[in-house]
Image (cartoon, rainbow, N blue to C red):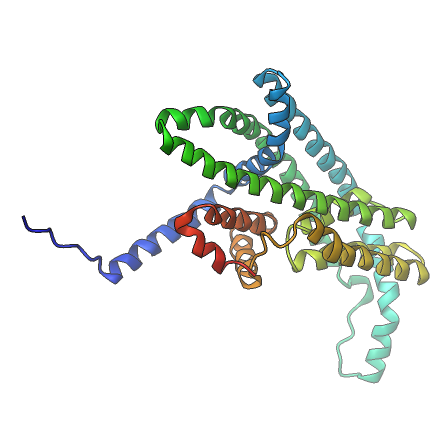
Length: 344
């Protein structure tokens, strides 16, 4: 009996398949953003809720009550936080003209001095300095908070179904793969779930501590709109490198514009810098460690990819998604070498 010849796919054919898959995935991610982003948020929230879900189920609470209670509790917290942030953002937008005038008062002497030393340099009009940029920022902030409220509402609905599916998934796997194969699948899935839960819970806790520390510093000096700055710092902490810079500069800049010069703004800047350094060097390593460390190049590529696809929400989700993918690859024997390539 002759062995049939092995068909070797032409490299051009393989490249064409890869291009088609990548292009299709790119199009789906951009076109279905309003569906996929809330779904990913619901999945991440479900992972953080699973330990509480298990405890309540072991305590004898009926599954429907557990699912509705957890989903409702998380949704209420998210909705309240975003509502407060939205109200603060609207108030902040009203203050933009006054902030612009204050900024002009601070930088105008420096501009005049530079123009006197170098008359060939253009001298911008003070009353129009950064007015357009501030208006664009105000419009973007209001639109972002409105979009956040919509996506939280959609994610709350998804969260119900995700928790319900997590309750029934082991039974379905055992029915589809009876015996040792099903148990092996559940064992691998258990390791993956445990690692993802540990990472997300640790990252969320460290981000919360950083946001609270920032809020305490700003409250001590009477800086307004704490909800906006704390939410900004919490979300930006999920974005490596760039997020820390944004989470530090924006509240510091606002403190410079609100507080009288110069002791207050300098103290706020130094204390916020100390909070950021303490979080990066002490808090995050204590909670997260280096077990899920990613290569800096891979993190930058992930930020560029997801930022291009979904903008700021994509940058916030980029590293958690990449870490989750690495954890999945780590716990599957065939793909474990790929996970090692992604490590620091």
